[in-house]
Amino acid sequence: MGSAYKFGHLTPTGEDNPFTYPNTWAVEKTSIGSERLTIAPKTGHVSLIKELCELMNPSFWVLYVLLLSRDRIHSPGRYQNPQPLTRKQLGAFLERFRNYFERDARHDVWVSEADGSSLLVYDRHNVIYAYGPLRQYEQILRAKGFEQTQKVLFPAPHSHHYNSEYDAEEAALVDYFRWKQSPLQEDDDA
Image 1 (cartoon, rainbow, N blue to C red):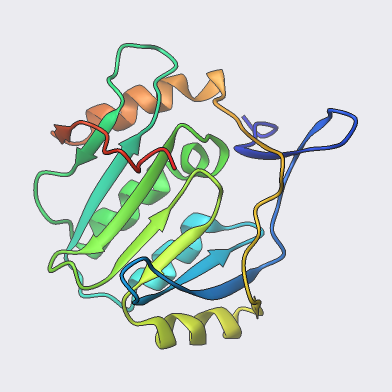
Image 2: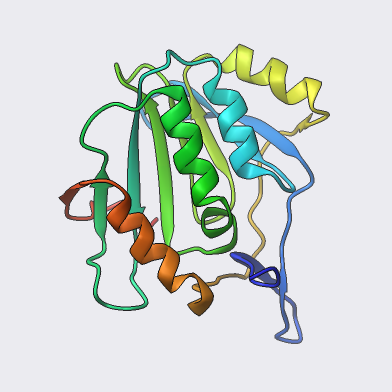
């Protein structure tokens, strides 16, 4: 499973190579005028999510957005855990599926405070969108050596990888909680 990757860059000669960002972040305006951070880690996405969650109240919702299923047994859709998780439960869940989240692009993972005031979205482009205590998030990023940029740019053209070696992980994740399932929303595949 070590060679699988989630997000690639297509070269002018048609080669598909793994793409990594240079540990940057940017402040962006959302469509409703508020701000969010777009964070582009080189590695350690799950570890960073767990660290940013330390700034949140310790009661969490997880929304797992399955954009496509390779085994066609599981339905694409939104899967929400049935009750809020403690920090320890969230950490165990993220660690259990770390490789799957970081090396396969069939999904997005959302983690929010139970009251909805803070949200982290780890998407299939290998970036984390952060809502909530932005200045505190920025302090963590600066301390970790991340550099602020005007905008995080995705490579173009790029590729998403849905790796067969993670099909069993998809099944294990869908069985992990008694998820509340709902259909994908129009902008889930954006």
